[in-house]
Image (cartoon, rainbow, N blue to C red; front, side):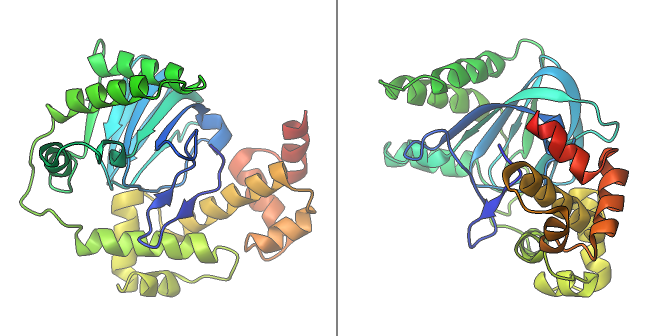
Length: 288
């Protein structure tokens, strides 16, 4: 997965599935390729992580858990989440993401059950430890998704079995089935940053996008993302700059301006402070 994150009109992430007409994403990722912190995002899909090596912290709606080799995580639908390592330790993991639309052709009873179990008022995440059956299922689906899928029913069957296994462990935690005003506000503010990161942004402008005051804006970012609005903005700008350094031939000065940095020298300073090397050296290393 690249650093590019597109969003729908409701601020959810527009995922790039392995195959455009089959709503499953199954790939092996390295935290290092995200510069040790993926952008915070959300989507309708159900997400499963299995750590193959190393470790990372993972935030789900502001709650942080630690994932280590051999363990994993389930993230329920429409939860803000991201993986990171403050110590810049690498982590290699399977990311399996299943859109519930895969089950939409089933009976109304199945559709109702899926809607109830993977709703806003149920468990937000589950740690998958030791010999949890879901861990092998994640690996099996990943392997199948790397084939030409001559018979997609095998993947659908295994995906159904995995989601059934997980759904048995989900419980209702509140009576609220809709998104809260705070969730909507943080989604709107994140979307505003993603769409306007190349402009000069103030905390007041970010707060206005979420229809909240400056202090509440800062509180929401602290709770859900564990960062200030400016820190998240800088992280996203750096993420987009890494993408441009990898995938385009634009000059350092052009990239600095396109990513909202005041000058190429300031961009280089911020980049070096974050990653320990200059943008030029980063591009050189990626081209090797």
